[in-house]
Length: 250
Image 1 (cartoon, rainbow, N blue to C red):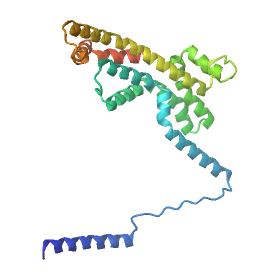
Image 2 (image 1 turned 90 degrees about the horizontal axis):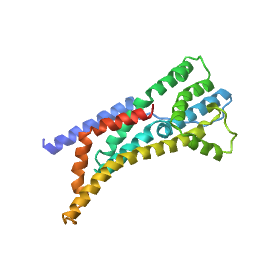
Image 3 (image 1 turned 120 degrees about the vertical axis):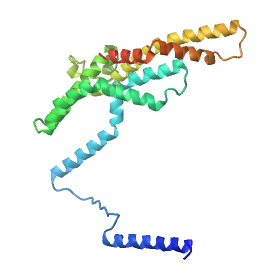
Image 4 (image 1 turned 60 degrees about the vertical axis):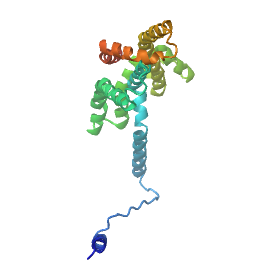
């Protein structure tokens, strides 16, 4: 028997084996989705709850970004990379991973409080769904109020044409979130400016030195880059930056 005939025989045996298995137990199950009328209002309520949960899972990344420390961290690290002029070093994946785990570290006390006050009592049947939502959001709102400027909050309160809130409880969460976002962006840009200044000084010194030496065709960035990296490493820049970011949220 030639190699070709042997291979053909083996292939035919495999096909027959799968055919026998398919006859005994189908590998691909059939799924039927029926759309009909609901005679029980509880069934409709359960369906709407499932749709609501799926919607929350869909917008979960946006919620994570808009209600946590992620924005400030990612903006500051982005400014640092641009100030160093290292292009894609650190890579985007490293920056996103660092910002995400720093966010988990900073938000852990608030998430733990939300879990203890709202989620666990609701799962145990001690409180209703409405109470669980309020108590779960309360620690997150407390964090956002700490980081939100009064001027930014007043901006969105005035634009919403709502009544002037007397306490923080009167401020809607949908008003608080955009105010928190622009406050985080402003703080991130302020920190980014402070990071840029020493590296700009190094660029100016190198550019002036090259011009005085008549090396006008040599890009100053090529010479200043090693000095900026050396300065950042000598002062333990990552330690100072991460420490300053974490302290800024307290």
